[in-house]
Amino acid sequence: MQPRVVAEAETFHLIEASIDSIQAALLAGRLTCRRLVELYLDRIAAYDRQGPALHAVQNVNPRALAEAEAIDRRIAASGLFAPLAGIPVLVKDQLNSDFMPTTYGSVLFRDFVPARSATAVERLRRAGAVILAKTTMGEFATAYSGSAFGDCRNAYDPRRSPSGSSCGSGVGVAANFGTVGLGEDTGGSVRGPAAHGSLVGLRPTLPLVSRAGMMPFAPTRDTVGPIARSVRDAALLLDAIAGYDPADPVTAESYGRIPDSYTRSLLPDGLRGMRFGIVRHPFEKADVAAADYREVQAAIDRAVADMRQRGAETVDAVVIRDFCTLFEKAGRGDTYEPENAIDGFLAAQKEAPLRTLRDILDRPEVHPRRRQELQRALGHSTAEIGYLEERQARDRLRINLLALMAEERLDALIYATYDHAPAEVPVSTPGSNRRLASLVGFPAISLPAGFFADGLPIGLELLARPFAEATLFRAAYDYEQTTRHRRPPSTVPPLPGEP
Image 1 (tube, rainbow, N blue to C red):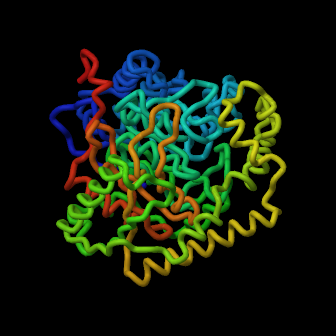
Image 2: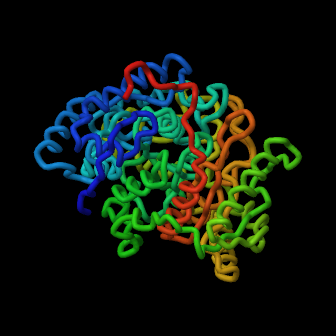
Image 3: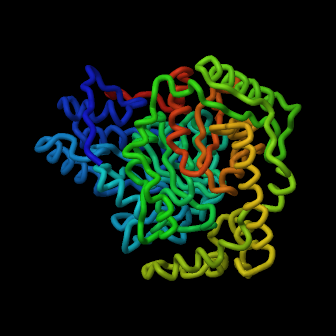
């Protein structure tokens, strides 16, 4: 991919800075990458373990400033030498990094430095990005607590859930601790933090992005995706990480199905002529009489009206055939896959302090809730009849979903990412609708859809067919530009001297 041409901007503002605004300032000489990294580090120092104490950052890259200086020299010599040149990225600590510790959210791996970085991390660096920090995550990829850091907290109200398990990347991007973030999504771990942080979070089609070098949980559902403050930044980040990787052979299915750039679908009238199915029933248990549920449904109604005004067509109250039965039979993916997947991953990490899931769960340091959840996987494997039954239900659900979209001529489904407001720490927010995309392996994007009366964000989710990320970006961009729902949290205001 050729480096982009970035139009020059007259002023630069750190809060809500985009990839384009940063690169324009770098090219114009009004900003250096080193200064940008320093500004973000100042915000992390002021707000992550002090002030609202968001606990979003696990470890800062000790080489970040040196890497930034090297990027400044390259920009001075040859301009924007790569698509993400000079962009500081926050990376979920589930992805290995050979230049700093990778903890997986656990104190057990506090000093573990892998021999090789994850493919996604290497692709970001080749695209010119600075890995600014590794972010906190629910220990071994569930929820938003871990023995390595405690509880991550919502930037809009630190008493509330940030959602997980990519909690640190979501909170860090929402709080302007970095420009964009990378998360991992098994059951909704990119889209949840995006919804609770007024952000854009994309779960890609499963074979689109390499998982090599990332601790797995359920390989038939695990994927890596961008978390950003804008649709365009999410598209640019996906450009950098998508594509075939021999180290993760499932990505071969993506060959020939990736556009030159996902930004080509960011059209000002993208919603015109699109057709959406609105899902009205909750996917998980929700209190339909609750005030916050009604607020969410009102936000969905407003979003549908906004899209129709932009020229989209909608089909109300669509229903996937046999949904409730199949959704229940498809399970949560937390029984049959994790032990073999984690054991295999750790066996390949020669420097790892522990080598099996059983070794991990024998240690008292592991967060009690995470221990209880992971113990369900011990002694199980994908050779069991129960796993076959889950996979059959998922296959049937996938077929029925495709049939609905074909019969109704739908580009995507629309529903709330969560049916309720962020719960109080340490409780998980009820009413999650994220699991459908994970079960069928389809792409889904969570978008800012406004705020509850108390100022907490509401998330809207769009789900499309496999490899239809461009369709999602097309709809999301027009909706975003029309509504402009995103606003930064007041708990982390500009610091004195910030541009």
